Image 1 (cartoon, rainbow, N blue to C red):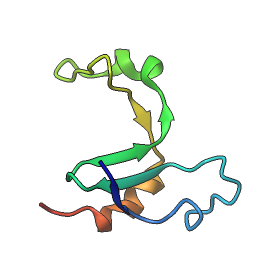
Image 2: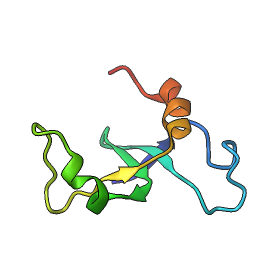
Image 3: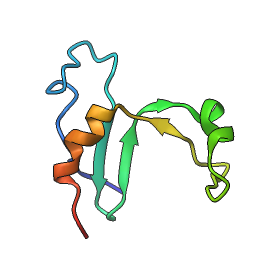
Image 4: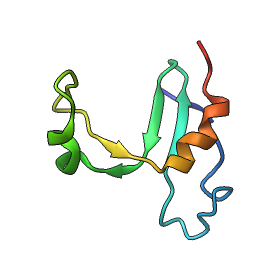
Length: 78
């Protein structure tokens, strides 16, 4: 598994110059995506809708709205 490219703008371009808030999205060579975000599994697990599930090895992470909106242009349609 390798990172192919960043999706959206870098944290620096989004205004993070301290490195303290660096959510990020990356496209992987297998077609999947990796996300750097704030771990929020304990806080949000009970909020998942009835038709959603999380495996023991999966975590819920939160990224900023700005991170996802700036990534939208780089997310492939297929």
